[in-house]
Structures are given as structure tokens and as C-alpha cells.
Image: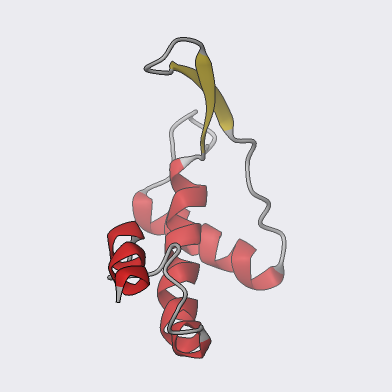
Length: 94
């Protein structure tokens, strides 16, 4: 916040985030925990990262995924773009 108690302009906030990431001073914020009901009863813990932390995670993913994905096994289906559980089942049936 600035001296008047206002949030910085988005461009200034973005510049500050980039600087903090580059100089290593950026630290992720604590994840907010929320309990959500399970269909069969009970509750499940769900972690919700801050918007800034999610933005940083997504930016890192967009840089690293194209570099690393080609090195994964063709039989790997978990958490990969364009692949899922149904694809794994289809491959297992072949």
C-alpha cells in the first residue's frame, strides 16, 4: 500500500512482483484452507492460494511445461495437457 492507504496501480504492483521474483525476495503467502462437504458425508480440506501466487505458478508452468513435457514417458497421463484418465484407460485396453 502507498502512504494514502491505497493499493498500488496494477502496473506498479506488476513491476514490484517481477523485481521480487528476480531478486529472490518473493515469498509465497499462506494458502487459505477451506473445508468443503464430501458427497458421502464428512468434509475435505481445500487449499486456495492467493491470486498473486496462482499467477506466479501459472507463469512458471507456461515456461517449463513446453520444455519438460517432451521428456516424459508416452505412458504418463497424470496432470499433462491433452491427457487424462480416460486416455490412460483407452491405452490400457489396447
